[in-house]
Length: 318
Image (cartoon, rainbow, N blue to C red; front, side, top):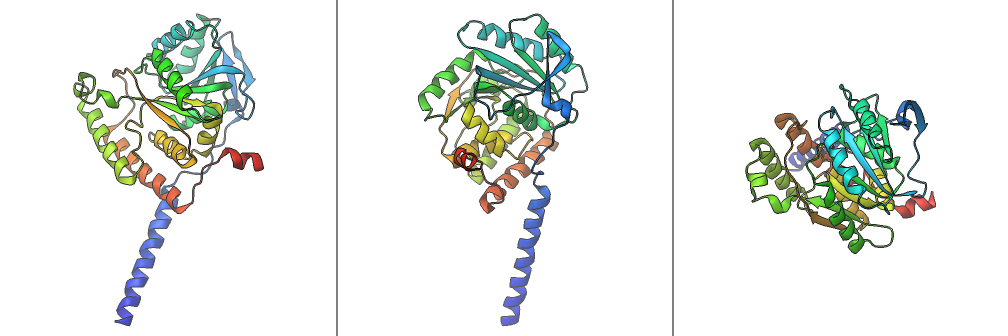
């Protein structure tokens, strides 16, 4: 019996060691370094000139930063930017900037954004162009950490969300904000039984239901719709969450919300209008598998303490 117990213990130890090494292997690298050009931006008024990006450590100098990750978005980006500027122009008292982060597109996304900006000279549009693809989460993170807004909105380039719903998020963030902390996230959960979702592609619905089940299983499903790309943060909250972010793939939103939960940051889930836009970059088989792996890797790293959030208090003591 003793020898059998020793064998069992040895096998169990090897299994644990294997799983830990597998976790290390599957976990993303700690940091993605930026090239000198990626730490600069261009304006539509002077597209040949580059200017240094600010850092989020500085106090906010505009009321709102709108961060738009864009990969091969020459067709969908202009209508989305038009809707954004049309809405923002109705609130002249709110200063803003729009940061388009071109995630190493193979088309003319950066030039499209610059050309578009020339039509709106009063809009502060800044274009960052990556030399290497960092995935959506990496693009959003870079834009957020180099923004100037007192509040920071991340929004998809496809225009699926109605930009005017920003006001619903703004109002709910006012309601839940505690001190300098708070977030309001757009949600399509109320649309699950409506034609907007029932009639959309089988692929999207399959991804949605499978992903929600996985989130509930690993205990990070306190927000009904984690993946809506329409989220508003206070500057302090954005700094804490995005400085702590490790996952840059499709489920980076899940890590943001998990971090908010761990740090005790209040989050409001806000119903918004949404409609599907053709041109999704998602691949059913590849991205479903990658998302499932990333969720498990995310949960394991925080449970084991390999990853820890960067809090405001910690930054102040460093």
